[in-house]
Structures are given as C-alpha cells and as structure tokens.
Image 1 (spheres, rainbow, N blue to C red):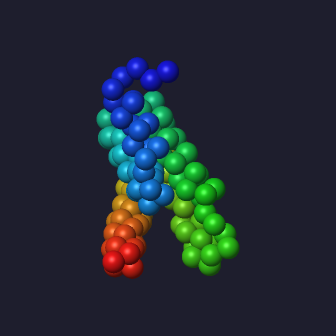
Image 2 (cartoon, rainbow, N blue to C red):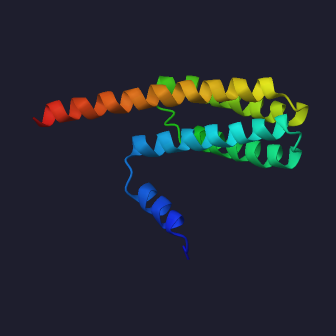
Amino acid sequence: MLTSPYEKYRQSSVQTSTPAQLLIMLYDGAIRFARAGIDGLNKQDYEKTNLNLGKAQTIVSELMSTLDQSYEISKGLYSLYEYMNFLLVEANIRKSVDKAEEAVGYLTELRETWLQASKLAASQTEIANG
C-alpha cells in the first residue's frame, strides 16, 4: 500500500504517461542512479556506488528487453545498451568514474534524442488531427 504522497504521485504519473514519457522517465532514472554511483565513487562510498550503478544497470537491461527487434534500429540500440551495461559493470568493478561518466553521456544523448522525437511526433499528430 502506498503511504507517502510522493509515492502516490509517482504511481499516478506512471499510470497516466504516454510510452514516450515512460521512456524518458526510464532514462532519467538511469542517469540519476549512474550519477549517484559516480558520487559514491568520488566519496569512496562503494556501497552507494554498487547500489546505484546496479539500479542503472537494471534500467538499461529493461530498455534492452523492451526493444522491438523487428526494426533494424533496435539492433543498434541493443548493442549500445549492451555497451552501456558493460561500462556500468566495469565502473563498479574497477571503481572507474570515467567509465560511469561515459555511460551517462550515452544515456543523456539518447534521452535528448527520444525527447526531441517525442515532441516531433506529438506536433505531427496535432497537425494531422487539425
């Protein structure tokens, strides 16, 4: 049972979001957790690092599992997600801020790309609907 107003808001926003908004939310979460992992690395708080980089990996794995493989672009995205997961694992094992930051860079670029694509699609829908 949800108790905090924040949890109720989060559940409501997930239930009422479009697929594009959900995708952006996943990227936001992965970026936030990866940055928290980097913060843990910088503070040598390896428990925080492990927890947060693990959460970022879980989100990237979810992005991988939801790709529609019938599209050619999905194969390229899958490879990129796989590489990001590799970077996050390496960052965690080797305590490498650089590898985590590289993963955040890819996540951030993809987030911006999807955000722009969703805005373009929404404007095209508005034009089509008159």
